Amino acid sequence: MPTTTAAAPVPVNVPELSIFDPVYLGIDESGMPVEVRLIYRNMLIAGEPGGGKSSLLNVIAAHGALSTDCRLCLFDGKQVELGQWEACADVFVGPDLALAIATVRRLQIVMDNRYRHLRWRLRRKIRRNDNFSPILILIDELAYFTATVGDKKLREDFASLVRDLVARGRAVGIIVVAATQRPSSDIIPTSLRDLFAYRAAFRCTTDSSSDIILGHGWANRGYTANTISPTNHGCNLLLAEGGVPHLMKTGWMDDDTCTRIAAHAAQTRAAARQERQAAQAPKPKLDLVAA
Image (cartoon, rainbow, N blue to C red; front, side):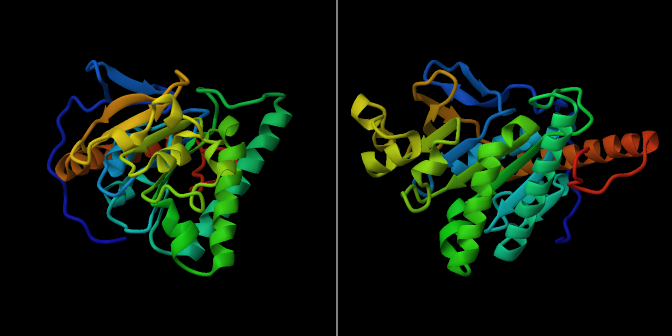
């Protein structure tokens, strides 16, 4: 882990959240807050470079970091988009495809064991007061791991494993939020895109690219990210609970704000971990059932 300097004190009004709470993403065209519930859901974020995808990832990462009932698992090929949250995460994977595959396989084991636990309890999904925590998986630049680096077979393995987590992980609290700046069918095949309940389309150069993110036919109905101005950073079409894409402006945090929140969250998580360890035997990171 790289050496970091201590962050400045965080304002006392930083809240402690829950991953079961609605996640604030930004504001809509009327200036009203836009919130979504990520628990039991997954989100796809895509668009042209510079549109603001990283801002949305950081907003979600901040909520996850401040949620002490949530585990963080971060994948970042560039290492800097999610790097500020590394101290809050159980796992941080940089530009290492082999490690990325190994980590996703571990998550798959976690998922399968949790399902066995639910089956034993005659339950269909986890609850807020369960003895194991949801896991928030953030992947920055999905294309890096699925189409850019390493052997083709390894990239296909990673894509297949992620698809399995997206398809089966929701009920056991495994949440996947994946972002890519290459909205093409080879990066986001329909079989994967349609598994994401939430989709955020940032600026795209063509209607077809927008449809690859939101789903086929939305451009013909007047919902296309091609109409978003290149200078309107952070603006996107969000397809969520309403069933129809809505224009929204993502909340923005500068590096200093992210660093302060991450430092506060890391301290809060460390304190919560010490309380758990005082009450029961310590458990390893990304254990098989409980958290």
